Image (cartoon, rainbow, N blue to C red; front, top):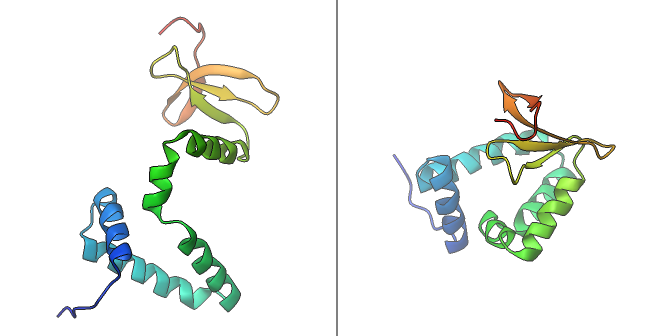
Length: 127
């Protein structure tokens, strides 16, 4: 049997946004988060748990996603992606269905993923 509890409006709003993507009910999303928290609490040391809590409280997913589709948000996303290991991938603007692989030395190769493996396209203008 369920037990009614009071939750903050911001938590319910965040759960509503996330649950739509995760295909869970709002209650199911909050229970999922609670289960993760319970599991993590048993394996984290106090400092680690506090650091995670502070990081999670800084920006909600809803605010982060709303801010990502703006000039400053796109700059932040690009800056973060540049910190990831090579190769990097970006859309091929003139080739629908293709991407550009950028290697650490700056080499750019047009191709597509076939069975989860990058395959260069022999002729950049062929399909």
